[in-house]
Image (cartoon, rainbow, N blue to C red; front, side, top):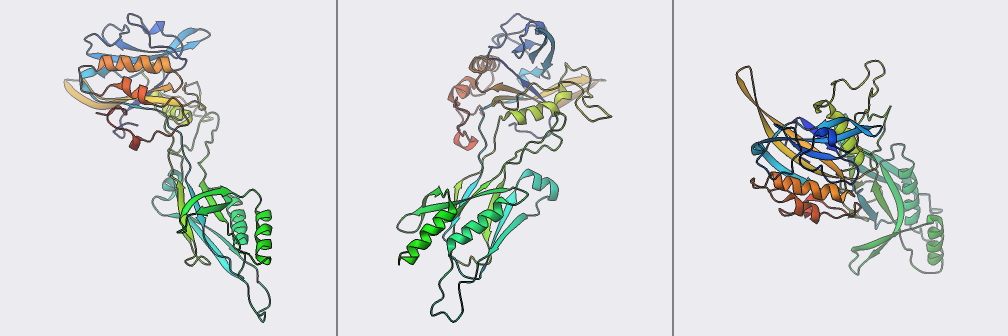
Length: 399
């Protein structure tokens, strides 16, 4: 989240379901993982109802039960804030498409080509398309001088292609044989997985041998999210977002006898703990409270001290404050775009409500929509999709 690219960003991560620290305290009074907003002049915490000009946020860091450090934001000059937004966590959603309606012909090569798009592909080869081809060939049906040459078995095509796709070392897709239900016009209605494709093939062949019709299966294709791989606690090859989208292009064997139905649109996770942790780590040198900007060893290239507080298995709601920091140096005046991201565990309702109220108090004189209403409108169930396109002015924090 955020409207600008390349601006210095500090990520603050809270923990524990506690309200922001009350007014009149110092940074040293913060509980572990507790957040507070402080007047830049007095260095005391505030509730946002005063007439402050410049503030900063801080989260307490405790070791052995007592505060030893804090994570700080850059100074925020309230009158120079460009945007104030809230984004609830939303889980990722892998793309799914159903491919069906094809026939089975004897002694025929079937080729299914799939084009993929994800951040790893873009990084490795730019916008040059990356595709994988999965193919199989059906058996001969019988001697050529037979009175009639029966068509092949469409379900054998399904079985072979599912095996090819699932055995691909790159594991870009997961394929499942399915039975598709259609309406009177042949349009897709629903589908269900076939647990035992061999038993299904046998059942349909028995129906044909008895003078009935063969029911042809289809294939459900699901994109596989790129896995998170860490080394010594660091993700050296980080990609965001990690989702993969794909397009299906039937080639040989599939002339005009197929249909494709996109059943689940791809969606990328926001507020995933692993993503928050990576961003927190990469922005750690922006933390004014750190004693050193060097946080990896130059010999073993490993993390030399704990630099992140995000839990990779947690889901986070996020507040974003973007502002222009005005400063003077050597008789010159400078303006820099900076941002502060605050990640709060989605289940920490006391922290979320208290921080929303504090932000609304701080920016009461500015023309931002109320953050408290955005927090209230967010779904508490972190498994529920909350796409940005489904939100409006009153529940996304954007003016």
